[in-house]
Length: 396
Image 1: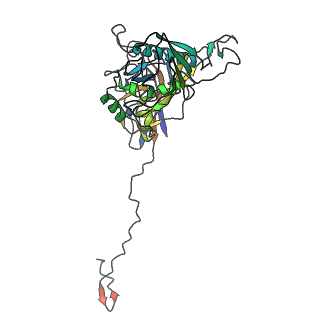
Image 2: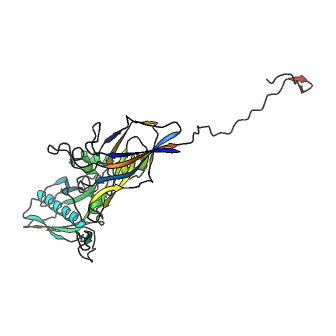
Image 3: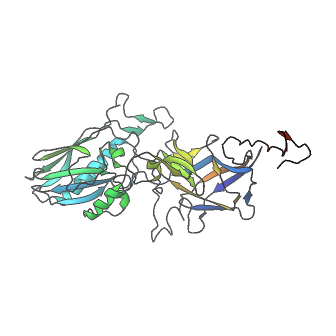
């Protein structure tokens, strides 16, 4: 036996209360009509529909930070720094690889002390580039040619002209995913970062590199295959690049006060990949949807498979938030002096969804000790003598 209440939510227009916003913390008040249940009832919560436009950028500093170290090189100043691909919307693996190559080129140029200059001379793979064609009159995303399926590993070469050299000393590029203990070592070792998220990011996923989970000083491990010649530096990925040039195939809706389980690396962005089950407040996993015109949103409809149970007898409010696969806020545009609070407060980052709240009857079954019942024999009547009981005397 159950009763269901359907609640429609739209977080537009600064829906967040108590210091929240439209995405990172928004609150629904039930003060005028609180949700109540009896001792033999529980409140079951299910999100049956969700929709949110993808109007933020996919390539941002939390998912594409790289560590560059140079020590003792002939024509380069020593450095230990974090560099980034410029934040942008990128549609293909080839665009992503070229953006990485060009940023590496400019970063190396800034440390170059020799004669001449550095340039990107060869750019081979990945060659599976796509265009927004209209071959079938439906704006489908199609390969440039029917045979251009190609390879998705990264491979390019930088060259130095004018007499400079790449040789001497050491040069490393690392994709860092350092847990908390290793981040402390990085901070103590003098690696300068603007944000601790740069020490634990998804760059290895995007670029097909090796994940580095241990802070090294000096750095030795390489995330990419580097071949240094006198005038050339060839850079190749160990693995194919990510099939999609982003790391947000899903976003996650969380509800404070409910208990679910998830692997630790989903909840804690600084875990050590132990994959232990841990406490979670996620109540919905929303997929990324792209239509034929390449318009992107996060949505699902008619979800009936997942629900969570609240143990509260009285609910006067619910506090929600959205996050990525590591529990981090979505990469929306931050507040500046020009945009009056940022994309999640005064901008167009908001969501709408349908919440089903159901009272579910549960059988009332008080806890008992699971032990066999102790049997006590009745006491004997007083003896009248001769071994016979007195039938007129009560039992003692």
